Amino acid sequence: DLSGITSLEQAVSIISGASVVISNDSGLMHIAGYLGVPVVGIFGSTTPAWTGPLGKNARIVSVNMECSPCFERTCHLKHYSCLKKITAESVLELAMEIRRK
Image (tube, rainbow, N blue to C red; front, side, top):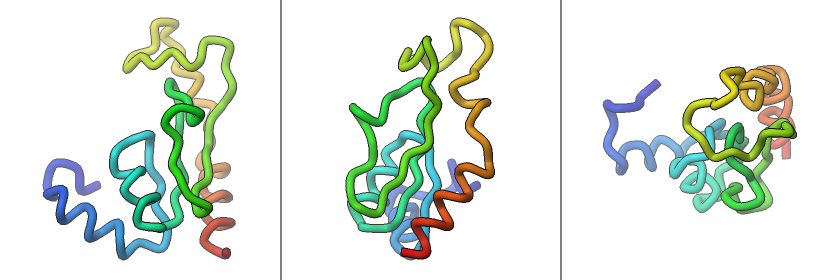
């Protein structure tokens, strides 16, 4: 985890050399997509339909919930299921799939 200890320029440099980027819905996810680096975007309270990564090297992980997308930073229902139901295995599977291409 390099958050808070790298500049934006350093983060972009690191991303540009990555074989795959796994990221939440964030600016760095979009930078990876722009650079053509394979990216797996994790979406909880947001929707990839509005803010998903662009490019053929992008994959999306999300869970359809009755309460989503709520676009909240904290879960008003207190269960955070939109994130908790995303498994590490599903993210890793997509990362490995996109890396093989």
